[in-house]
Length: 147
Image (cartoon, rainbow, N blue to C red; front, side, top):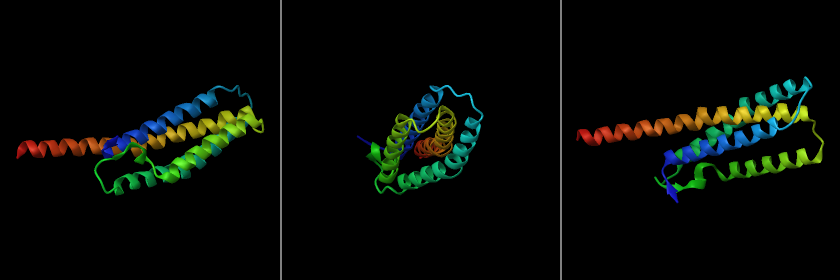
């Protein structure tokens, strides 16, 4: 299935929001009572919202904008490197939790920060891009109707 840039942005937005929901559900599934969860939350937010996810989303947005054809496969909503990083993060997170090496406070705080970061970056980068594409389509339709 080949789709326009608008739908590539939309797929990326949905993918990141689903990821956010899944990570948030993991964070919400643990019982956390210590104050260290707030420290882990702050570290996670600073790292992922401040540095990692905005750079990745902007890089993927530039990738989508640079695609040479108007219609592309749905999986081109992210670069190959982003897909690989996502797979690594999921596998590493599962392994880390299953190993028992991390506390519930870590899972609650760190995963909560990742979830919020994913959602907020997705909306601010991909959501805005979808909105921009919709507005451009409307402008083109008006121009065609005026001709």
